[in-house]
Amino acid sequence: MTEQTNDKWLKGVALTTAILAVFAAVTTLYLGKYSSRAILSQGLETNQWGYFQSKSIKQHTYEIQKQNLELERLAQPNMPKAAALKYDDTIANYAKNIQRYEKEKNEIKASAEAHAKAKADAQLRGGHYGYGLIFLQIAIMLSSVAALSKQKYLWYIGLMATGGWIFFFLDAIYLFY
Image (cartoon, rainbow, N blue to C red; front, top):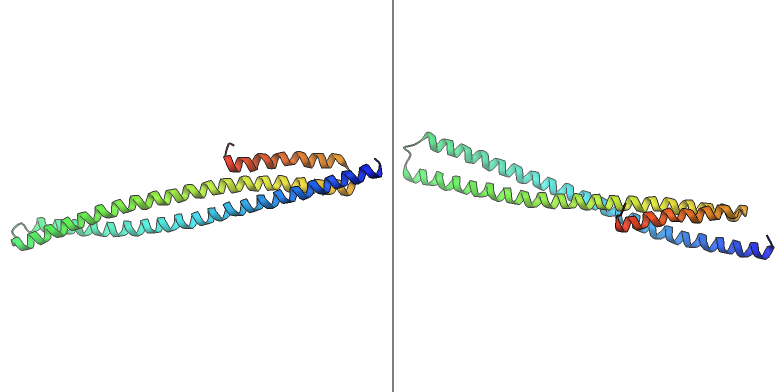
């Protein structure tokens, strides 16, 4: 290899390495973005399940109280009419609260499941960006070693490794694999 050809090739390797480093920076940005989304979604999901539990406890309290009032009402068939009406009104009010809590729990459950789905999606995409980043790091390392050792085949192998990055980067976007 002539000196001029060698210099031209080294400039190409340097430019390629710089471009790969830019791709690595962008990939790292996306990896961080989806990692943050996964963590945020996990927190939101956990909050929703805690909220669901609190609604379940309140609903269960109303169910127990309603059942106790119904049993008391049945145990006293000759109670005064005003007391019986009060029992009936309270039992009906408790039944409404039970239904309200059931509806709220279903909404909260749907929200928690949506956050769980968002978390799983973010983890999947983040993982693919991570795999792509590994391929870029391999390509950068091979390009650097190729420049130091002046071994073109290492540079070519590094360029082929970018195919792994392209695959996983696109897969993180389109989720085809």
